[in-house]
Length: 231
Image (tube, rainbow, N blue to C red; front, side, top):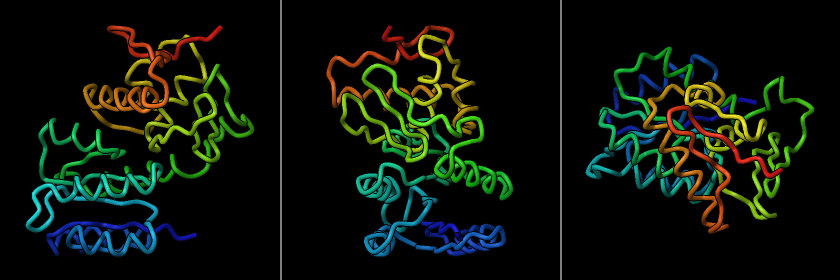
């Protein structure tokens, strides 16, 4: 089935470049120049992946608003920011809103294509070494890799695709420390350590919203993180 990508970019020449490059790889690509037109289209049907600029027309942070709007409608829709704004604050802000990845516009088209493919791999079928594994259950947590579904004490946790695979990597070996690099490798991420820290903080907040006593994600200073072994 042909994957549908939405590119939300207010510069027409850039939007067409991205659309042409991704279409040549076999994706169906729809372009939008501003937040309102994208939201009208997405109210009818969500894309399979969204690539969003932060500044959209006369809205300096219209992309952030669109990301928040999309995330309220789907926890698992892959969202990638592609923007000229390269500050760490903007990157962290985008991830806190639920984006899965953040790239600047100096990225090459092959690199962009690779990151898009990585997001689709994470949101599609489980990898070969996870096949047949079924649902993982550790204490109050259950994970279904086939459906990208997480439940804590029987209640759904609305994890993004990236967040799900970070948790999945920790839970497969509870009690074992995973470095930030190992978590990035598992989630097909190419980000700095502060960005990975932001992902983990967001994961904690989502579990804490369901359970104020949640303490399963443990920071091991200087080493990484581990999922607390309930045994």
